[in-house]
Length: 590
Picture 1 (tube, rainbow, N blue to C red):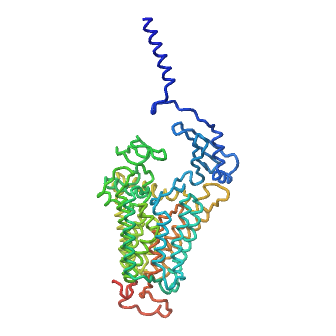
Picture 2: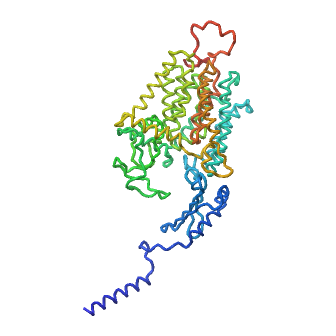
Picture 3: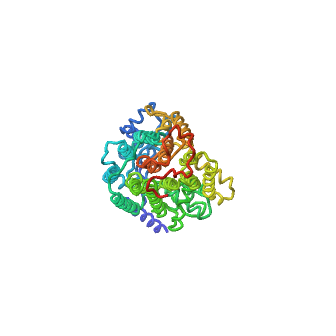
């Protein structure tokens, strides 16, 4: 026994010596070494980064700091706080002292503010050759070559000028990008308002000089190019399009979308993402789904629009290539384009139809929306088709409601579209209200899928309008006061003035001008939508296609002959027995 015990001890000693002298085996467990740097040294290195130092100069000296070390990645994460502003900077520092990430101001809470290339629509659409190519095609295709110095050319250049703001956004310079978006929004608002309120403001429409077949061929090429890019862009569906697919799946399975989005809570069922977060979790329905907790902030039509694609193509539960989102984005992009063709042919003939369709296909921001696979083409598509059917109060009311219950901004159009061609007739307004009510009831019927209708209504309000009203965002000029930074203005009070003005405008266009033709309806539709966009706390480039069709109509649509110039003697003239339609022009389809 003594001999055996001695042999065992000697064996352990030999093994220990061999292990101590042997090289490290790859993949074998090794104790994590302590960090090389101290917390104080890491913080000092981080705050000396020029970007961080410039931002910290806007705050009182000696902010609160903290740094945590990740032994697995051998990196430090640094946090900086300052009083009411909260966290004002964060970043990553390697254990050898190199700063690999540094985020300040809006970039701390908003990853989309960090200037990540290709975050929206992929890298190709925002590459200089593609973006400038689309911009040049848009300008050369629509400019009046015989009058290149006209105001209409300025209108086209202003529409393209949002690309300058986008360039700053793509570099992560959010304050500059938001500020640069305000002047073109304001110009277009004033320009379309001037056309809509004053009959003589635009004596003749702009005219493209290209043959109709050239515009049609260019449009077909652009449609194929854009759809091809969408189909090839497998990973370009952002959270907005993903939310539409989730909401449609919930409806198909007998639930309203509101309060039933997948959350980042529960048992993990997928790997960590590039940001270290695990989005795939087992949800209350027992299914592994990728989280999108704030995806239920839109109107019910924004989810119903995805139902056909989800029924056809399905959904895996993951944030993968999402073919249903691609299909829906392509469908409504084409529906908007087709609607513009019909509007153009009806109110101005084939040339106007080709012009409007080309404008939609060539405008860089409609491609930006298409390749981001968002729901932002749904609302303008519905409004364009409503404009085509504007002579019917029922159709006008239904499309206004459907557009408004997709994106709430369109609800501001209800007074304008209610009084179009109504001559304040109770019968006309009643038919509009009936169409609006019928479409509203159809859209909100999904709330009946919930056990309690009252709870469903309350949840809808909290998750949509309630959320939007209280939303913080750095992507407009209005909410910068949340950063409490020196040199950054707090314009919240001015925003209130703009919002009140938007409400007054949306009501005023119902009565002024008294007689509205298609041109006035189009121009004032653009004016109201632009006013809404200008007043939003959270504004983004994806909203530009909302107004594009009506800005183009304001520039290119002929003035209807059915709306006479105001003549004092005509006030007492007897009415015509068979008045021409307000949207009629020679050669137009009835």
